[in-house]
Length: 162
Length: 162
Image (cartoon, rainbow over all chains, first blue to last red; front, side):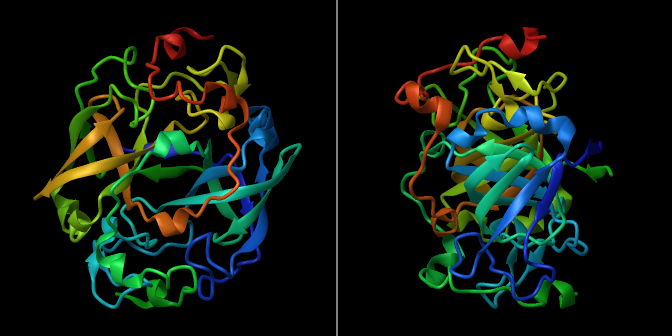
C-alpha cells in the first residue's frame, strides 16, 4: 500500500545546510522563517491568525535512507528510530511546533524554526493545549540530557552514519 | 511534486465508524487500542518503552475530499481547514498524542485513542516536553469552546458536508 501526498507550500528558513541547525525549534539558536502556502490553498488559512502556535508536518526531503537504529544528536548510544526525532525514518516525516509571528495573505511568518530551507510542507495544524493533555511524562533515554536539549546543535551524523 | 509513503503498521481501535468517536485523545470517552508495527520495522521500537507519550502520524484513510473551509465539530461557523483538526485536508494526515501502556514485541498498547480502526500508521515520534516549549498560547476561534473540548464527540458532518 502506498500513500501519495503533494506539498501545500514551501518552508523558507536561514538553514541551507544540515549541520549546525538547531535540533528543535525551542533551541536558543533557532531562527525566524516563513511558510509560503501555494495560492490554491490560501483560503484554508482563514482564522489561523487567532492561534499562537501551529504544528508543521513536512517532508524531510534531504534525509538519506532509513536506519531502524541510530545514534541521535543527544546521545552516543544507538536507539530505535521511533524513540528519536532523527530524520532517517522509514517515512521521512518531520514534525515541529512553531510560533506564529503573523499571517499575511498566503505567507505565515514564524519565530522559531529548526527546518531546512526549501522543505516541502504537507500540513498545518493548530496547537490546542487541551488536545495534548499529557500527564506523568517520562522521556526514556533522554532523561540524562535534560537541560541540554535546547543548547544542542546538529552535526553531520545523519549524512555519515552507515 | 508528489511524495510517497508506505505504512509502518496499523492502528487497532474500538472505533469502526466515524460518528460517535472522541474528537481528540484526551476526550473523556477515549478508549484503549494498540498499534501493530509491521515486523520489518520492529527493531525501530528499541527504547520506546522508556517514554510515556508518543505522537502518532497517520493517514486519514476514510477522509473524503478536501475542503479548504469547513465547520469543525467544535463550532458552527466555517473556518480555514488549517485552523482546525478536521479530516478533510489537502493531505489527509492525522496527528495524535497518546499514552503508552506497554510495548510488547511489535505491538504498542496505548491508553487514549481517538483514531478509526485499521488506520494506516506512518510514523511514531517520542513526546519530549522540552521540544515543545510553547508559551503565551492563543487558540483563536476555539477560545469559546474551552472546557467543552474533552466532552465533545464527532458526528457525521465530515461525511455529509459538501
